[in-house]
Length: 121
Image (cartoon, rainbow, N blue to C red; front, side, top):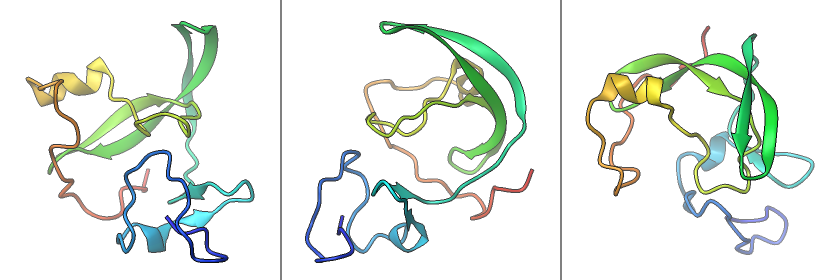
């Protein structure tokens, strides 16, 4: 990715956005230097306690649409900063139930073929 000032390549922690990608024009640069494609506001459906190696924390759950292949699913997502993670979104078992068998040895195997704007509530 370019830093926007000197037009030199800068570190891309996700290693997914390519130079000249159609996604780049839709992204905005935040004050901390990170990139955001779009900001969405959703009502909190509930809160959940998540336990992990770092301990337990409470996270809000929101209802959002996600496109996987052609179908659009209305699913619940827990909110957490995934900026330093390999994947920007994790798909839970409730969403995977709709998909059927999944080959966990592969990633990014299906391009989305849904409408561009899924932001409507």
